[in-house]
Length: 79
Image (cartoon, rainbow, N blue to C red; front, side):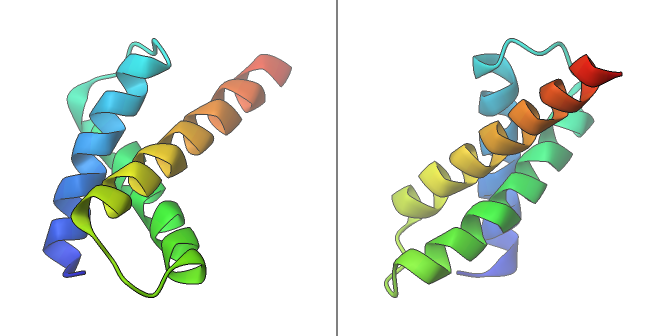
């Protein structure tokens, strides 16, 4: 999948993930989390599947974003 498409899907997934986790973040922070989540999800996608679809990439980017947000909330709770 092209890098630009991964960044766009990741940004959308990040915005959606912050809304699902009910986190009050600004748009750039949500997009950065989504892009990082897309990277995490993209690595998992390469491991699980050889064929890449846009829907599968978006779902794994969303799952990666949710995982990063959950870890962030867990870290914030311990402080």
